[in-house]
Amino acid sequence: MRVPISELSRRRWLRAAGLISTGLGLAPAGARATGLHSGRLRTIDDLDTPAMIIDLDILEKNIREMQELCNRIPIPLQVHTKTHKNPEIARMQLRQGAVGICCQKLGEAEVMVAHGIYENILIPYNLVGEQKLVRLARLAKRARLTVAVDSEYTARGISEQLQRDGGRVRVLVEIDTGGRRTGVQSPQAALELAQKVSRLPNLELRGIMTYPSRIEAKPVLEETIDLFRKAGLPLDEISGGGTGAEAVSKEIGCNVTRSGSYAFEGLQRINTTTNPPNPTTCATRVIVTVVSTPTPERIIIDAGQKGFERNPPNPYGYVVDHPEARIYTMSVEHGHVDVRACSHKFRVGERLMVIPQHQETTLNLHEEVYGVRNGRIEVIWPVAGRGKLR
Ligand SMILES: Cc1ncc(COP(=O)(O)O)c(C=O)c1O
Image (cartoon, rainbow, N blue to C red; front, side, top):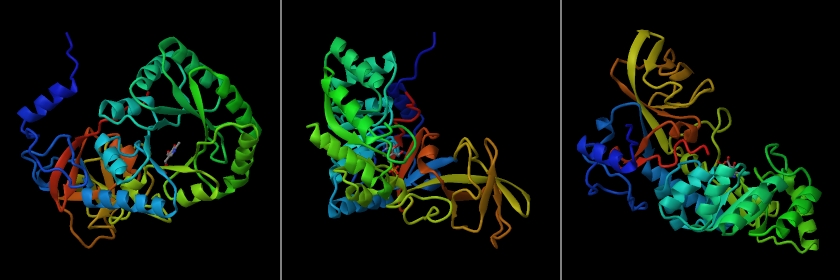
């Protein structure tokens, strides 16, 4: 019979293997982590590779600075946990002043609730299908949930499930203001859906949601707000979002903004051109080992698509200490690095640190991450929300 590997047995196994202590390890000052603590792993040199680390000083700085920014604007910040999938980091953000969390998938919200976060959880995702609705109704009994919808079908499904199982859920109507993903397509459509939602049992209409916040969205959002006001519909929440768009959220009329990537990337989203990965604002790194130096021009590292991401841009990421080195392609388990511009002579066995391009997709590939300060491991965090696609 196959025995499922529960979190408990996983911890027991890690402890027996000496990979975690009984809990006496150091926790990051801001974090008061209750996760797995380092045992024999004292410094990053003790880690086998590839290993993903989080620089705790940078993480704490990013969290602090974003909260300060939102306080200055001022606009309440609801933090998106898709970035780190980590209840401990979510708690750090809440302690800093965030008004709630936002989980892209129901499974991620379940993880956060299981770890004791119950208040003001937004799922900005159309929840469709009986399996999910049953889970949503169950979760709604334990936590204060808000969901975003962009169709009557979705709203009605949630309402009917809650009528069967009991409980209430708050609802935001999602409007597409130029992001061209989900959301109703006009202010009038938002009004009509909101009126339907307001009549559905067990749902509490709260307002509007959009993503991403863009300045061009202002007229559309203002028109929607106006229609809601005239119809006497609630506008407790007008929710915008996106790292770097906090002031824009305020400018276009939102009264709450959702940001996620900032925890790992800093106050501006990183990209390949205008704001490439920067070691002072990016909190994560993947430590890799050079496993081959087949030619003077090329070295191979022990992480590829399965350690970083499926479709890496070229050049990919940032090699700390050797920024002239360019990760130009990846096979599944190998990273190919062009070192022609480097004066350094790389050796097999040498370890490098790479800042991943899209830090949250990289994180989702790793079972655990190591919280590090000045090279010392302070905490080992399982990526609790990893793979929660449903
Ligand atoms: C609905 C929604 N809100 C907020 C965010 C946060 O965006 P960012 O990661 O840029 O902070 C996202 C990101 O995907 C999102 O999809």
